[in-house]
Length: 299
Image (cartoon, rainbow, N blue to C red):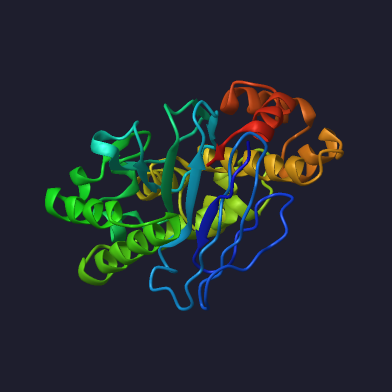
């Protein structure tokens, strides 16, 4: 059974697939409801002039029915995830998800709500106090990076909220407070420029040396700085960017030819695309698309 879900974006409204927008509540809050077969919705909350817009890419609330599959798409961006329900310690907990390079699947126990704030590339240290490389490939309890007192204060505020939108506002406010009060070293401009080029330019394959040459540094130096900033190397980052472009294109038009998708996403050919889907998702493209059609929540 499908229910309504919510997602909050800072700097633009994220529109889930095949859903007409609906406006809820009062301005300046904007909500977008979405339904996925198999029990999910997401809404978007975009507070006007949000103080977290520079560090939070999107904030989402997922309502998960019991035994509904959850597919988490890999990303280089770090996320803060809060869980409400029987799967969480004492009914609510919070963790940091570092950069991950492979699809993860799970089936939550019982009905569960989760709240996730996806940080912008390079924002980890400003929000968490640690670089993205410190949490890459790991799931870390929020108290281990924020400290017991700050994490406990957030969880107490979240536990008192009546719904997902209210919880999103609480988490957004807590992140804004961290950014306003914590001094930290800014993310490497070199790493951010390289990420922008690898994400938007179709180097086939990820030609890290070409990007390094364009930026006037050695490939070795770029790899070191990039991994230190984001927790993944530039080649792995470009591989994830290709994967996400292809997956987005396939979900937007399921009649599109895979050879066309492969070329547009930056793969050598369709065989290259299929091989990388196997490596990242453990399944061929059509199988993964089938999973996503019935998934309760998509990262």
